[in-house]
Amino acid sequence: MKKLIVSTLLLTASFAFSQVTINVEVNGLKNNKGQVMIGIYNSEKTFLEKTFRGNVALIKNNKATATFANMPAGEYAISVFHDENSNGKLDVNFMGIPKEEYAASNGAKGFMGPPKYIDAMFKANENKMIVLKI
Image (tube, rainbow, N blue to C red):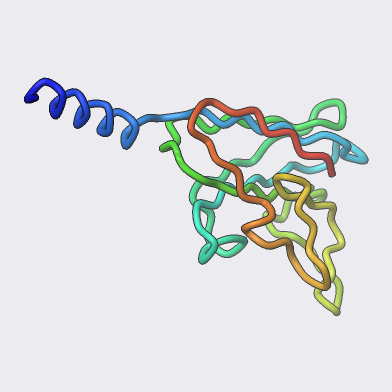
């Protein structure tokens, strides 16, 4: 009985502390200017407000890639935008509509606003390759 309890605890602990790698590929960029800003979010509360992890990816052949290693297994959502002028922010017009291309995981789109976390969310319990088309 003790062996069963210890084995169960060890198995549970290994899942709790498992690490994954999330590779992100962004396709369909209209040019090679600037950079792609990539944000990974781990909760609905912080989605599009505060990244859990972020990266800046250089563009080559209208494509950008980034790797996020040592991520705790769990649920995430990704948001990216093509920062053509390399100013580090998503440029918007006077009405707040983005002037630069953007995308979210699962192809999530917003209606009269940004996409929702629940639509962009995916589970990462093992290494993942996420491909986004702008």
